Length: 299
Image 1: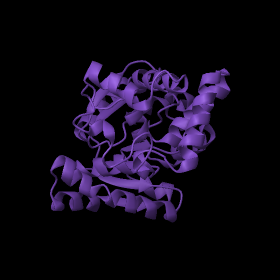
Image 2: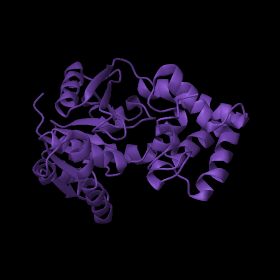
Image 3: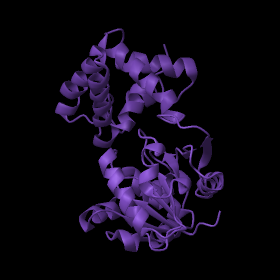
Image 4: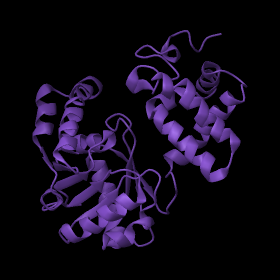
């Protein structure tokens, strides 16, 4: 693995985290987005990561500033990828947007450049041909709060070159991730294949009025030793995301329970501004949620 220059395309929540984590581990990073306004928001978002690195990782002021110093920002795709050894794509989960992006990227990037998608719901084989270099394309998927939840799922498609696959596994380790190789395509990778059924089951229990939020979470935490229950996890994921997933599943399957879940999330949470941890309230109130209190797991 001989990567030095990394481009992250898409500077949303996770794109910004991927870019900063990569720079923190010593790589030169270019952040690409569609306009300068998006890049200004990215700079603000990335600046807000610095205190987290100091608090959670014990990083010094000099280290967090040096990481930022290894970053550059561009809204010109050809400029952003001119020297890229690896492009990590973290743009919206819309097939047409990704197809257009990869068609342009394939024509613009140097021949050496490897492409990786951070898509959580779409498979690399859906875009492999659009890239124009399917053998140099695969998925590299991160979890939110990447500096703490440091998983990197590396998933090949049938046409991915095994040398490329191994290089990206090594790159994931080099940026401080626990590298998790997947040898076959799997919607949801490993993490979401395990997590999503748990979150779905918890929401079904709630809308059936089997138990309340705290009791469901308490059950999971006491019985498994997990630090958070499913509703605390949903607060981290964000209620908007949970709503969009529930609504999409309702439309795709006709399952009335998914529709009830979506309706509940909309009326009781989204319409009331309770969007999860990011807004200070979702299923729990932050910064001191009840599930984190010392007596939560007691009788």
